Image (cartoon, rainbow, N blue to C red):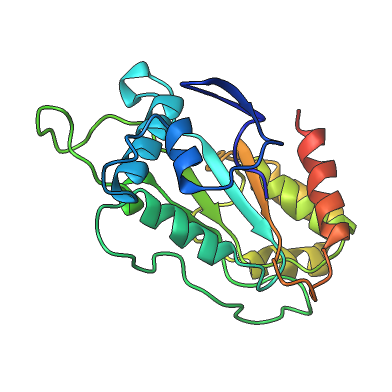
Length: 231
């Protein structure tokens, strides 16, 4: 799962993603951290500063990026989200994204579309003790697991999600029911009209690290196909 760019411009110059770091000391050097200080906390604060500079500020007039988290059932999407949220928090770890698969829907998908905006997972004061630090943190969009399929319904569902045609907390099962009752054209007609809500800007595709789990290649191809079609 890739989350960083190919290179990072550190104090020693650009470092390729193909170069491996053998120790925490090398990572500390990369981030410009004094290795004589207590590790862990300082490292975290430095990484947060890097992220803050990358995303920019609310006062710039831009809107936050909407990042969709996609994967098959039980691949670790919620664990990833909770880890991301904990990484930006100075408090103890807590569960914000619920774990688990909650039903089949005929071996399709489960539950609804949920967004985690900045105020749900990120709380830092500004330089003059302002309530908000003006950092343009992204909104993460969670949707429960897909089956490993590349069919017309899955493609159209992803289109609907990527174009922001689903409302917050709208049930994914309702989309499936409408497709079953009215077909593909009926589904397109229903969701081609109206307001855009959470238009997706970036996608993180999550795969299980279990070596016994088969990669969802059909779903990966489906997501890639739909995402490239939006460009």
